[in-house]
Length: 224
Image (cartoon, rainbow, N blue to C red; front, side, top):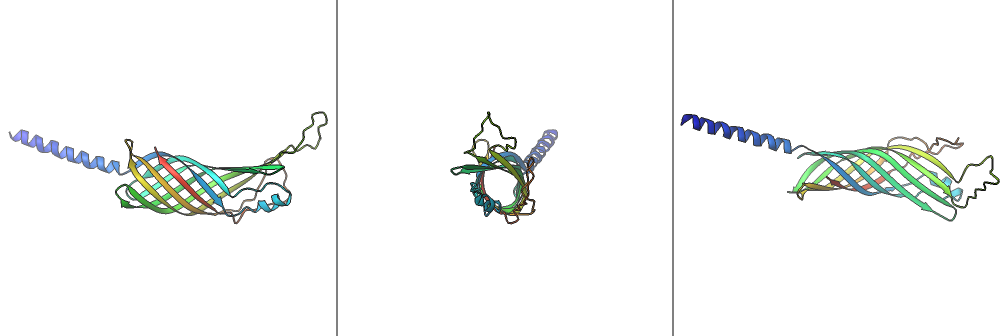
C-alpha cells in the first residue's frame, strides 16, 4: 500500500512538473507571418528634376507587402521580415515605376489590455533599395535606321536608404483553431543615411540626395 501511495505522489509530481514546463514553453512562440499595407513618403528631391524635364514624378504613396518570422511572449513582440514597396504613375509621354526591396526589424514591448488584445510600443529599423524606372511612351524605334547613340525608351536609377523610428501595434491574439493572430502596426521612420541616386549603367553628371526622405508606414500582419 505504501508503495502505491508513493507511486501516486511521484506520478502526481511528475505531472505537475510537466504542466509547468509546458506552460513555460508555450509562453515563447515563433510564427511565420504575411502582411500588406501602405507607406506615405513626405518628399522626393528628385521630383524637382523630373518635373523640370516633363517626366512623371514619383507618387508619395506605395503599396506594401511583407513576410517573415515573428517571436512573441507575454512581454515582447519582435518580427523580422522581407519588405516590398511598389508605386507607379504615368502622364502623356512618360511612366514612372518604383520598386523597393528590403528587410525590417520591428521590436515592441507589449501591454495586455484585454484577454486577447494587446498594445505594443517600440521601434522599427529597416534598410531597402529603391529602383526607379522611367519609360518614354512616345519613343519610336526604327529598325531600318537605328541611331548609334541609342539610349532606349527608359532609364533606371537606384537609391539605398536606412530608416529608424517609433512604432505602435494593436494585436488580436490567438483566434481560430490554429491560434492565428492579427497585428496592425503604425510607424514613422526617419532616414539614417544619405546615399544619392545612382545608376549601374549610366554616368550621372548631377548627384541627387534624398536627405529629408521620411516615411509613414502602416501594415496589417497575419501570423500563420
